Amino acid sequence: MNQEASSNGENHQVHETSYSGAVGREGSGLLADCLLTAVKVLMNLANDNPVGCQQIAANGGLETLSSLIANHFPLFSSFSSPFSERSENTSSVELGHQNNRHLTDQELDFLVAILGLLVNLVEKDGQNRSRLAAASVHVPSSEGFEEESRKDLILLICSIFLANQGAGEGGAEEMILPNDEAAVLQGEQEAEKMIVEAYSALLLAFLSTESKSIRDAIADCLPDRSLAILVPVLDRFVAFHLTLNMISPETHKAVSEVIESCRIR
Image (cartoon, rainbow, N blue to C red; front, side, top):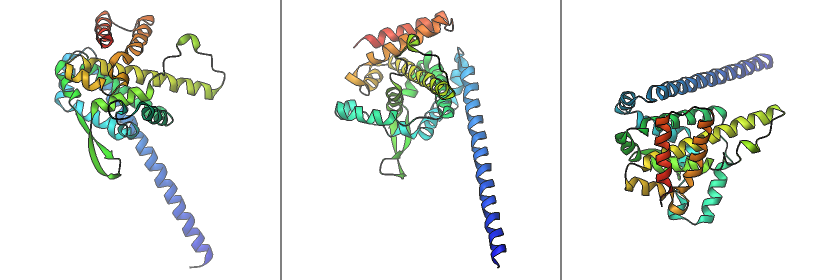
């Protein structure tokens, strides 16, 4: 084969590789969009719909959503509770490291949808709360990705909350008007993190009302072994939705009750 033919062959291979990569990325993006849309549809079906919540759970919805979190967000799966097993200094280092690993906009959107659906599924269904609190998921082993171990979902949800804790503490009065595209994107990402923080706190709060053992299991994964850390987040959640008139009296009452339960040590 002469040099020109060899060069043409190499160029052909490069084009094929580039095309395959582009098709792969497009297919992966399409799959992610379909998955996100499906979760959002289920979230709407489960909203104030007891029968819908029962049907979704009966068809493995709780377990599937738990696995989606573990598989799509491995940075949370790698977290282990430092408050029951390690020193406080170690915990701050680990959580700080997690916060430096930002999710993409699509990942944040997907996580928000999953958490929102889980909140709808457990808000008014005690059986779903018990099942979800007892769930565990397969996660990659810390020694390598060929081995797997199981982790309690409660620990996974707590790690999501702790990794996003403080996202909404600034408050609306400290927000500034962005004057460039980067600032706008950063603002959107911070808003998504606030929603993740709120939904994970709300999910933990609802789960904690089902039994003392579940409450204790959640508290063991939080600072000071207390659910009180959830209270300011939930207060902001309620205040925000009341301002926009986006919360029904029934939901307001339910959330207020779980907030009060979280205040009790």
